[in-house]
Image 1 (cartoon, rainbow, N blue to C red):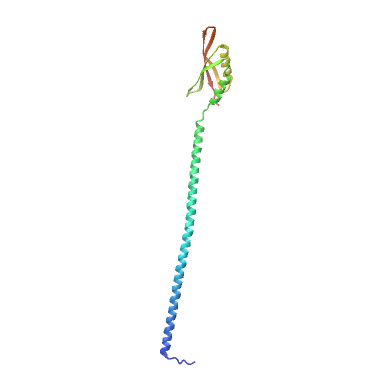
Image 2 (cartoon, rainbow, N blue to C red):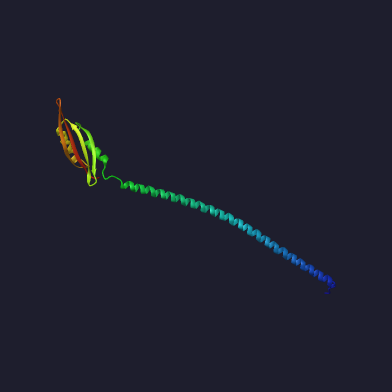
Amino acid sequence: MINLVPPEIKKLKGVRSLGFVLTLGYIVVTSALLLGLAGLTTYNYTQKIALGSQQAELDRLVAEKNKNKTIIDQAALIQSRVKSVANYRSAYDWNQVLMAIASGTPTNIRLTSVKISSDADKPPTVAINGETGERRSIILFKDKLAQTKPFSGASISSITESTADDNKTYTFSMSVGIAKK
């Protein structure tokens, strides 16, 4: 094949072809850069969204942990208070003591005072004062209390007799020991 194209046109055609290749390369490289930038922007945006949802989940878990910690602290406080209340529980059942005195008192005895006295070194005692018209009722009362739980023993401290117009009245004092529960 014979090429009849003059060499100037050949050169011009080669320059045009080179310009076309360079322009096409520039467009391809620019497009690749723009697509890469768009891809990076999209990737960055999706990562921000994922990071935001992970941060929200982390905040929720931290709040739940703090709530659980508060509940655990409150439970520990309640448990501590329950233990301290258990330590302050009396070694004596005072309701049982009062019920035993009430049920053991004969119907013809009128109690005038009931006092609990306690010494740190000794078990507590109950001092009972009262009055009746029969001396025997006082002794029966003492004997009944001495044999009743939660008492450990009873003793008569004093009996005084007073006479007023055909009525004899006996005033007494008695001491009753209390046993532990």
